[in-house]
Length: 361
Image (cartoon, rainbow, N blue to C red; front, side, top):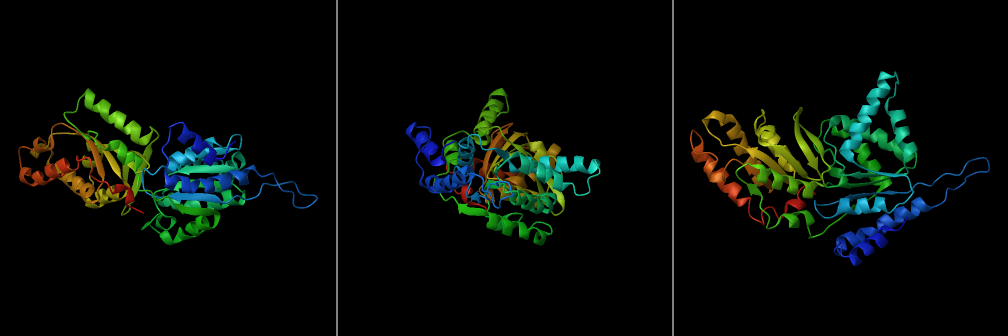
């Protein structure tokens, strides 16, 4: 076990990382948690067993691509034999739901209690990547779950693209969720990581982002970009839009991957695309077909999707049957599509969406 600041310095010296003042500023907060977790149990009273003391956690938020997840992963790696778990927040909540379902099937009246106890018994530190609440079921559970974890002196570290006050923003029955935000502020140190450097965006600058036609080479390049941006660790993301569910098949830390059919072959509307554009910073969209009167409805949805992405400055990486100007060459709507083709061209510029990491803060 070592301090994160020591490990970070070693990575700098080895040339594996570049010095970054915003990252360096947060290192003492991680070191404080390490020292707290190292402390010996304290015995309060002659007949009571020694207990570990509560260690305040960390809520690290800021724009995408600033290195939050990288620092958290290094921190967990530095803890040695301290029982710790690093997990994507969405995956963790899916796991909790599954365990609660099994508890109910076994006749447990309060299904959350044994599940929370099981988690608390297994770790002293939980590290969540990308905390976000988009589902009302999660919103109703997470408060009680975290209360139980904090009562058991589990320390929580999490990254997020949103300040705590913006979690589950505009969600259904959000007033019931507000005590959880207060709990976060009480049990975790809130730290915004502000950096002018967007490492993920830098990796895209100068890279091709529009691949046509769709062939084995295009698919291979798209896979490589997705692997680089997501680390291969992605899960579906379900957004609630006016009581309906809109699902992105793969999502991690602001980067989403979907096919044309996923987003334009289904009955989605402007509100759905605006919700996607609000949540996503980079969209990898695959298999855009040629458009015509034969798929007019899908074409209209595609136009609406691109408008939403364009206005929100979402970075678009896509594979298509043809270059933008040749996607829609016959049938009703060709004139209107000229603007979409122009936007698709503009969105290929290496500097497009330079400010996307600042959205949602």
